Image: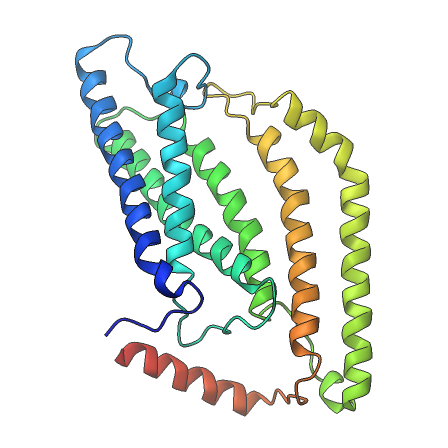
Length: 267
């Protein structure tokens, strides 16, 4: 039985169809590129895949990849696991979509590294791009994971004193924590905006043989996603403001986690 929709409702089917359509385009283009590389000396390779200027097929491939990633992430965000915090705040859906993108990217890193290991140790033909590509993808996995951890309230929190506070004092502590986070976000953006803008406008590259524009993309992404984390923190505060106080005893946490894991395995 299909799980109940979290937020897409009747749009779940069309979103899945669009994701499959983009995936089919990616698969067809990939097959064509592989076959063309076997018969042509000037075929498109990984060096050209990050340089789409004057190569409409490369641009189409990149757009198809982004479309597949986006719509698949949107579709998967409509499902919430047994041990996941269900969306309650105004920004939770955005964070869930980003978390699903990170989940897909983890699989992509595994595929890239598997290809590199086989190419290097079986065929003695190591690649020039696998390490940089895995670093590039892993950077976004790390950034999106922080946003997802904030949405799930699974970041590091110390409850020893917090649980002893009355509710009004807990709310005060939450406001102070949010204020410190917003101050950190402001300082990071204020100090890093000019450098990130410069790197992005000149699309600064990594300086290797493959030479991907990792600094030119990742540096602005750090500032953007830390802003998303701050917005998610505001969303959490609003969603949790009128909730009853929670207590986080070690025994209770263990029992809940064990029960949720048991239900997940049974399903």
